[in-house]
Length: 130
Image (cartoon, rainbow, N blue to C red; front, side):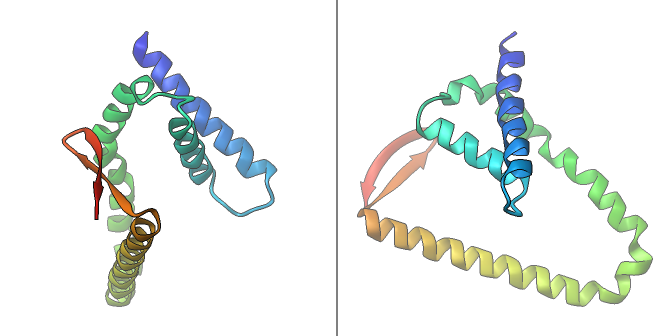
């Protein structure tokens, strides 16, 4: 029963993300709204991490399986993709690099603005000065 409740919470948040995606006039995917709603619910302690922990861990464990259909799709479409493989790889690598750099700079900025960094290691949370 515990798992059903946890899964229901995650499904409810996902559903609310779908509703927001359809109601609001922005072109933001429903999954992003759902993640944002979950973040707010966790930060405001409306939902406690323990209320979704077990199902979240399960979903993380099975996440690699979710990449199988897209991998098969790439293999099936190989004839179309082989001509643009090198440019696509370059764009993918550059895009990944730019996202990593931007993420690092944003984290650095936030650490400077707040004056401290949250330390999360081995499941223990604490505060540490930079």
